[in-house]
Image (cartoon, one colour):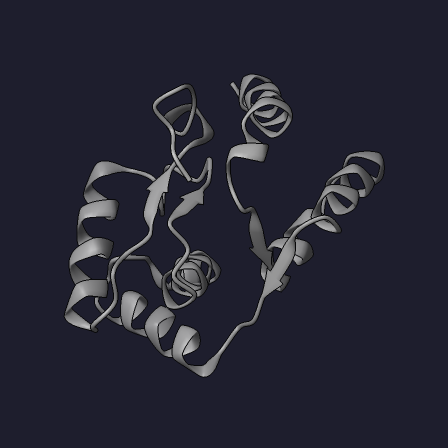
Length: 138
């Protein structure tokens, strides 16, 4: 399954990326450094082509709120920060394969509700499989 997700990600990057303004955060860069050195180097090379969003105090506060409200478990606080950086920067889509803490129906619904209670329009959390094809828009 992991190999399939990796291939889908590569395919998405090659065929769909140009349809969107792709951004990331320093947190993504840190995570991209992990694992196999060759794969990490390839991930980091791709990230040099995207704008890096700042981790602001408001993002940190929203991340803490998502954890405090149990939308994201404390052990996955970095996942809450991914969400909060996207939300506070007005990012329309957050692509992830993290279906445990981010991209699942129960979590998405709770995250969306909590973001709105804090005055934010939530980002659309989805996997690359969901943001594909002619129907996808920027």
